[in-house]
Every structure is written in structure tokens, then in C-alpha cells.
Image 1 (cartoon, rainbow, N blue to C red):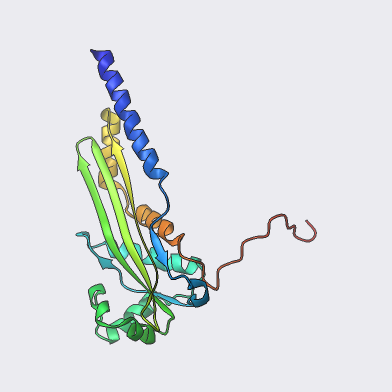
Image 2: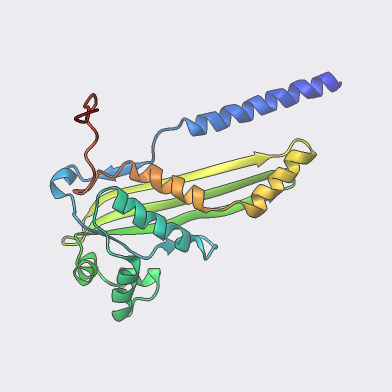
Length: 217
């Protein structure tokens, strides 16, 4: 009887491992971009206040600085978040949900940029059930031309990590994961995966030439 239970448990763990592996090996984030993006690449992008479709009020605060840094790393100029928020407040925009009361053209002119990044947090949850815990983070992104209002690029991605306790120690680790795990690393993963699909901006560093040696080395 004990041997049968062990066999069933091993089979169940193998199945879970296969599922986790299939998720880890899945393709990149879904995305789309206009065919002539290369010819219309914006020089500057403003990261607008992030919309929140979850019940966690802190979600936008975690995502937005990560997005701002990612845009800069992709080679685009991007105004400081404090400047963006200050200009929006001057025009009566104090919350992310109010941004859509202005057209992309109006916002672009106000901020003096070529394009606008709109973002929405779609998942920001932790689940804990005795020996099982999971954390899910997801977001949707849209880049719009500030002159025409046309969507230039969009992407959506979600990451999920699961923990399962099978003995006293691992149950304790699962509880600690559910209670103390930070959302920030998962937000970073979501942003990085989605922004792999966004073409680099004009200021992106050129890739190093393979096989080149520095003089004197």
C-alpha cells in the first residue's frame, strides 16, 4: 500500500514538473507592431500613469518605475515621471483613469514626446491554500504615436510561480513564499519578456562586433 502511494506521488510530481517545464519553455510574449515601425521609430516615449485592473492598489506603483527604466534601456528618450505627472496635474489629470480624457495627440503635445506608453496591470495576486501557494503577475502594454494616435506596438504577458509543500519544512517555505515574497521580480519578468518584442530605439547601443580586439590587447 505504501509503495503504491509513493508511485502515485512520484507520478503526480512528474506531471507537475512537466507542466512547469512546458510553461517555462513556451514562446515569447504575444505582440504586434506596425509593419513600418522601423521607418517610424519614435525618439522619445512618455510612460503614462499605469491603469489598474486588479484589487491591489500598489500594483501600478511597482510597475511604472520598471517600465520607465526599460524604455530607457531600449534606447528611447523618456521624460522623468515627476515631470509627466506634474504636466498632467496642470491639466486636471490626477489619476491614471483620467488620462484617456485627452487624445494621444493632446497628451503628446503637452509632454513634448513622439510616442506614449499606455500600460494596464491585469494580474497581481497571491493565492495560498495550506500546502500550495502561487503568485501571478500580468500586464498589457500599448505604444501610440503622439502625432496620429495610431497604435505602433502592443504586447501582453503574464508570469506565475507555484510552490507546493510536501513535508513540514516545505510547507513552511510555501507559507513564507505566500506571505513575504515581493512582487517586484515578477513585474520585472513581465516587462522584460514583453519588451523583448519592442524594436530598439535610436539611442540603443550597437551590438559588439564579434572577433574584434582593442588596440594593444
